[in-house]
Amino acid sequence: MDNTTRYASVNTKVRALEGRMLETQDYLNLLSKKSVPEIAAYLKQKTHYMDILSKADENQMHRLQLENLIKESHIDGLNKIAYYFNGVYKDFYMSLYMKYEIEDLKAVLRAIKIKKADELDYGSLVHIGIYSPIDKGTMLSSKNCRDFVNNLKGTVYYDYLQGFSNVMDDMDLFRIQMTLDLAYFDLFYRSMQKMNKSDRKIVEHVQGVNVDLLNLQWIYRGLKFYNLSPEELFNYTIGYGEALSREYIKELCYSKDIEEYQKKVLKGRYGFVFDHGRTKDILMERRILRYQHYKLITTLKKNLGMNISQVIAYELLLEDEVRDIVSIIESVRYGMAVDAAKKFLIREL
Image (cartoon, rainbow, N blue to C red; front, side, top):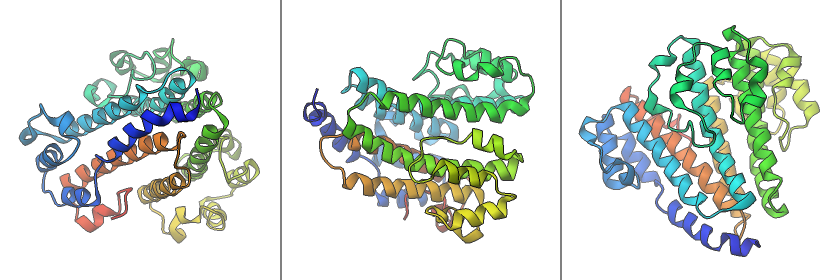
C-alpha cells in the first residue's frame, strides 16, 4: 500500500481529533479553578473530555477518579487511530501502547518497594493489558521483585527480565525498571524497521531526540541518586539517539561527579537541560518535556503530507495534554499559585 492510500483517511481523522484538543485558554481556565470537582465540571462541560465524563458526577469527583478517567480517554484517543492501520503498520502503532503499559508496571514496582502493592489503586492501572496479556490482579499480588518478574511469564517483557527471576533483593527494582525501558526501545525499533523508508526516517528523528534527552536524564539520576559505576551507567543507556554519539555518552558516564557531568552537558547541544546549574529535578524533567513538545511541532511542520508525522504528533501531543491536566489537578489540589503552577506544565503559557 502506498502512503497516499494509507494516510488519506487517517490524516483526516487525526486533524479532526487534534481540533478537539485543549487550547491555551482552556489551560488558563483550568488553572483558575479552586477544586478537583471544579476542574472536572469544566472538562465535562467545555472540552472533548465530556465523552469520558458524561456518566460521572463531577460534584463528587476526587483526584484519582478524575486522573483515571483522563487516562482512559487517552487510550480511547489512541484507539480511534489504531482502527485505520493493518499489517506491519498496525504492529508499529500498537507498539506505542507499550510505553504506557510500562509506566503502570513501574508503578507496581514502586508499590512493591514500599510493601504496598496490594494497596495500589486498581483503577489507576488503566494501561496494563492494552499491549500484552497481563492480568492486573496477578501483578498486584507480587510481593517482591522475583514475583513481579515471574508474573510476567508469557509476555514480551519476560525475555528481557528473566535474569531477575530468582532475585529477592529490592535493590534490583531500579534495574528492572531500566530493563523495561530498554525492552520498550528495542521492541519499538524492531517494529519501526518494517515501515517504508520515508516514515522510518521521520520516526527515527523524533524518537532519536527523545532518546538523547532520556539518556542525559538517566545518567544524571544514576550519578546523583544511585552512585552507579560508569560501566553500569553506560550499560543502561539507550543506543538509538540522534545527536549524541556513544563515545560522548560514555564520556558522560565516566564523569567523576555530578558537577563535572553538568559542565560537560552545558557545553553541548542540550545544555538547556541544566538551566545554568540551577536545576531542580522535577523542573529539569519539565524542561525536557517542553523541549520535546515544541521540537515535535517544528519537525512536523516540515513534514506535512502523506506520511506518519501527523499520527506521531497526535500520539505525543495527546500524551502531553494528559500530563498537563494531571499537573493542573495536583497544583489546584494543593493550592499552588497560578504562576508557580505554570512552571510545571509542558505547554508554555
